[in-house]
Length: 205
Image 1 (tube, rainbow, N blue to C red):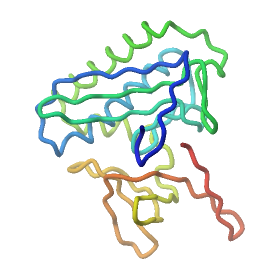
Image 2 (cartoon, rainbow, N blue to C red):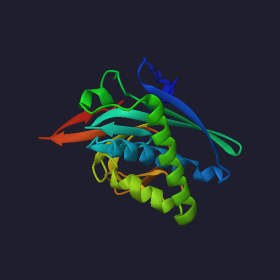
Image 3 (cartoon, rainbow, N blue to C red):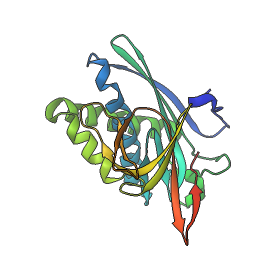
Image 4 (cartoon, rainbow, N blue to C red):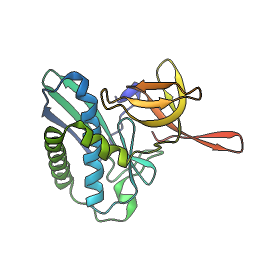
């Protein structure tokens, strides 16, 4: 089961793995780990020749505007379980997979090794330079940054401009039409397209 009751589909031929990472940082820094893993996934895809990689708050990787991977974290004392799902051979509706983009696909084992190596390198950078370096890389590929979005939460819906990520909490910064700033830790982002006084919502599940 994924976030907010969504079913985590797992068709054969895709990559599904759970990494157990030692992580004794304060609990407040756990959200930054999600950004680090997303950046690592994006860098691996780019190293394999995939272009148009974007990172979508809070835990998705997009390829040509469609979801290709997702990340889920669970904190257990000084460990974090990092669940990664990457669409390699099969894509659910409204998503994409690597096979659809006509590049030779490496084995799932080699792909997993590449991802682990990339995460390890980013965590080393985090320890040496701080979480800001992770956020800079994430924001450089952030989908819908400085654009109008809708954030759907369990008991409310917020609309505004996606301004950035709070460097202290890792929360999404959303500025609503009144100028008020919201710092959000959870929610589903929907891109709002405005055209001729009409609003269209582009959803990437």
